[in-house]
Image (cartoon, rainbow, N blue to C red; front, side, top):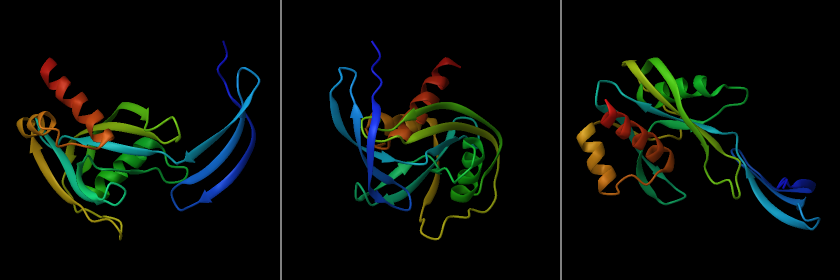
Amino acid sequence: MDFTEKTLDEVTIYQGKIIHVKELTVALPNGNSAKREVVLHPGAVAVLAEPSPNHIILVNQFRKAPDCTLWEVPAGKLEPNEQPEESARRELREETGFVAGNISLVHDFYTSPGFANEKIYVYYANELVRGEAEPDEDEFVEMKIFSRDEIERMLKNHEIHDAKTLVGLLWWSSRGERE
C-alpha cells in the first residue's frame, strides 16, 4: 500500500527567523482528507569532537524552550546553501575554537517527524587543533572536555537530556567497547 499523503493546500501560520509553521490539508491513502501542522526547519549539525583518545568536548548552555542548561555536543543550524560537513566544521570552530583535521558522518535523523522536518547530521571529529572560539553574539557556552569514564557516568545517571547528544555519545560509547 502507498502511504504517501498528497498536499492539497497549505497555509503559513508563522514565519520566523529559524522555523516556519504551516497548516497543510492532505489527501490520505484512503481518499479522505486531513489537516497536518508542520514545522519547517533548515536542518542542523552536531559534532562529537574527540580532542584526544577517550575524551569528548561538550558545551553547557541555557536553552529557553526547556528553560534549563544542558550539556550538549557542539551544534547549530545549517545556513542557506551550506553543506552539512561545512556547517559541522564551522559550528565546532565557533563554539569551541577547535578545527577538525578529520571529520566523518556518524548518522543523520529526523528529530520529531510527526510534526517537524528538522534533520540533524551527527559528525565525529578528531585530529583537532585548538584555536579561539567565535560564538554568535547571542550564544553563551561553557566548553569542557570529559573523559570516557565521566561520559559513561553521565549516561548512566541520565544527566544528558539532549537527543542529538545522546545519539552521538551512545555511538561513541559503543564504539569504545568494540575497540
